[in-house]
Image 1 (cartoon, rainbow, N blue to C red):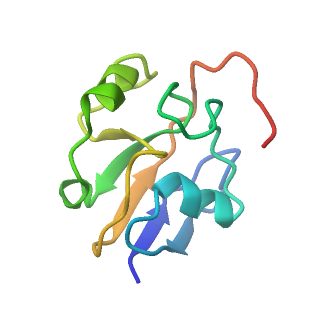
Image 2: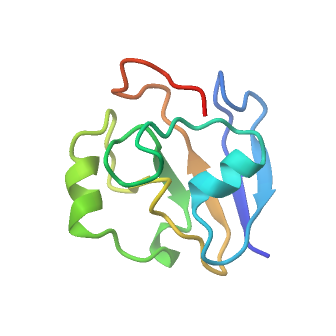
Length: 112
């Protein structure tokens, strides 16, 4: 099973984590199943940027982002060339190393 290594995040995952996921699952779903509460204000519908992640390793193994995701990413805080929306990044058979940015543009955190 592919692994997702989550780099330490001061609030969501202070020690970092190594997660296992199945091919086709999104990075966001795997993180949420493992207690890492990445924000997802639009209920995973690719309509916001709160689940923005940066894929530090394994980026090229992901399917390319579509136009809708690219449009959303243009609004993300701290956009980088390896940025993706966690709700859209489906894992393949390759391990990933991801970083959760410290800020989002969401003005009100929601509990899901």
